[in-house]
Image (tube, rainbow, N blue to C red; front, side, top):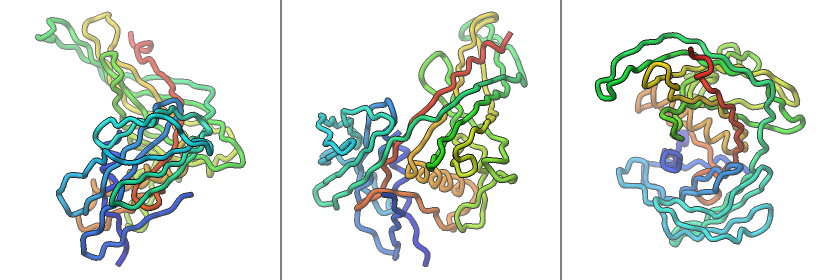
Length: 325
């Protein structure tokens, strides 16, 4: 019998916002609970962790948030002497803002459960130059809004972003791209579907085998695109992104209430593997039956389940209104 994960770790990523592949052997009996830990210390952002208790994957019980965890942390080999604040729902504010190059380790104790440990390094930001972007209008229509008693113009189209990535030589680097869109001038970003046509980063098919399941997923499209520097190590490589956008204005001649941006992440190896396997699980759920064998999710937590992985982000802001007349 092949080993499987129990899927409980997916709830960590959904609710939250020394590598090893841990596998939990399923023998038909209920497994003992574990500590579930998720944290992605990101450069320039407050460090938050989420700690919960696992449940049997066939159970419908609510996943228990842990509010009394004893957390010890160190940064660059020095104890983190900050006030840790419980935020509710298993989330803890560590009282520290990580920076690129930080080496972080944690130790978590919860009464009645095994102690867990983990560690990661926050990677450096990607070196991005030669940024260019354009937009193509696909459709435009106007209508009268009875509620606002005003004309509304809506535009759909395609956004193109090109940039040059300079990959550092002599090290393994892991990348993730996301294309975001915001409306109404707020900070509520939505992540759009987009794609890359790049036969250097990806095979010509643009498809990737999901482990040994005999199915393939698109590797160069989605709302997250991942790649490593395996084929561009120490080189400069131009990357071209294409994705959809939507604009609208409340009246003719007014500013369009939309913003777009491309986010370029560098990830620690463990964070990269976690996101990649999570994407595989989500893709498999969409196209396979309940009888398919679940995909294993990557974890680097000793004594429990979950992931501690670092990230750093570069943002390319695109103002779509400059292309609209």
